[in-house]
Amino acid sequence: MATDHDALTTEVDRALKAGKPAEAICYLAQIVEEHPNDRHARLALAVALGDAGNGQGALKIIQALADRLAHDGYLLPAMVVVRHGLQHAGDDQRLVGILRRIHVRGVRAKAGNLPMPPPLKPKKGALSQATAAELLALPLAARLEKVAALGADLPAAGEAAIPLPMPLFGELEEDAFLETVKHLHYRRVAAGTKLLEEGKVGNTLLVLAAGHAVVSKGGTELAKLGPGSVLGEMAIITGAPRSATATADGEVEYFELARADVAELAQKKPKIAEELLEYCRKRLIGNLLRTSPLFARFDETTRYLLLDRFQRRGYGPGQKVIEQGKPGTGLFVIASGEVEISVAKEGGEAVVVANLGPGEVVGEIALLQDTPTTANVIARGQVGALFLPRADFQKVLEENPKAKEYLQTLSADRLKASAAAKDESEVLDADELIVL
Image: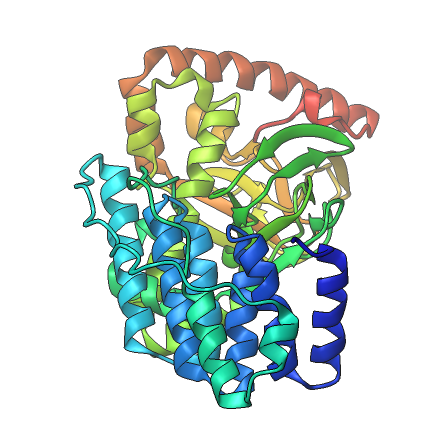
C-alpha cells in the first residue's frame, strides 16, 4: 500500500541532515517504487547512494535515467541528470558517452535528419518490491546493492520520441558542447522566483531545461517561454543590465553559464568560447532585426544576410559611441543599456535631446546624407551595441530601395525634431527618437 509521500520526504530530509545517506536511500527507494516517473526522486536516490558508498550503483542509476529521458525526447532533462553525475564522478566515460549521444540527437533533430535510435534493452524481469522498513533491516552491503538495483529498474520503455529543441547546445561542435556542459550550473527554483530582473547587472546566460518563465518589461508581460529557451545572452557579451524580467511560472529548472566560465573556457580553449560568443551575437542580432522598426523594412533574406555583417561593440559609462562633427563610420544598434543623445550649441554647451535604449538605432543620418554626425551619443552606463560598417550599410540600402526611401523620410523628420529640441532644451521621448 502506498505510503504518505510527504512523510517519506520528511524522513529523507531528516536522514540527509543527520549525515546518514545510507538511511535516506531506503526512503528514496520507496518513493521511486511508488512514483517510478519521478525523475527528481530517482536522481536524488543516485546521489545519496553514491554518498553512502556505492558509487558504481549510483552511476548505473544515472545512466539508466539519462538514457530513458533522451529516449523519450527530453534531452535537456537528460543533460541535468548527466551533469549531476559528472559533478560526483568526474569525467566518467559512460556519462560522457551519453552526452555525445544527446548532442548527436539534438543536432540531427534540428537538421531533420534523425534516424530511429536503437531500442533500449528490455527489462530482465520485475524486481521484488521493498519498503523503507525492509531495506533498513538489511545489512549495509546488501542494502546498497538492493537499492542500486531498484533505482536502475525503470518502467518498460515505449517507442523513441522526437526530441524537443536544444538551442545553444545544438549549435556547438561536439567538443565545445562537452566542455560547456562541464561549466554549467544547474538551478531548480519555485514558482514566482525571478530568474532575471530588469535593470539589474547581469553576468550569466540561462537555458530553461524544464518549466516555463514569463518575460515582462516595465510591468507589461511580453512572452511566456518554455524548455530550450535561452535568456540573458547579452550578459555573456557585455555584462550590461538586464533589459527585461523573467519570472518562474511554476517550478523551473535551468542551466546557468557565467561570463567567468566563458572567460575560463577562452583561456583553455579559445575556439569554444568564440563559438559561444558567436551564438549569442547571432541570436541577439536576429532578435533585433525582427523587432526593430528600422529593419522591418527589409525582407527575411536580407535580414539573414545582415547577421554576419554586424560587429560587437562594448562601451563603459561616459564613453562616446558617436562624436558630433566626425564622419559617420557606420550604423549602431543599441543592444543593451542606454545612451544619451546630446547636441552642442554654439559656445560648447551641450543639450540633451534624447535617451535611447535597446533596439534603437543611431548613426544613419550621417550615412544617408553624407554629412558629419549631428550629435554626441554617450553611454549612460555599460552599453552593448552592434555595429554595421558604412560600406555594408550602403550596400544593403542600394539593394533595398524601399528601405532607403523610408529611412530618408524618417531622418528628415527627426532632424527637424532634433533642431526643435535643441532650441527648446527639451528631452524627447523614445517615440520622438532622433536617429543620428
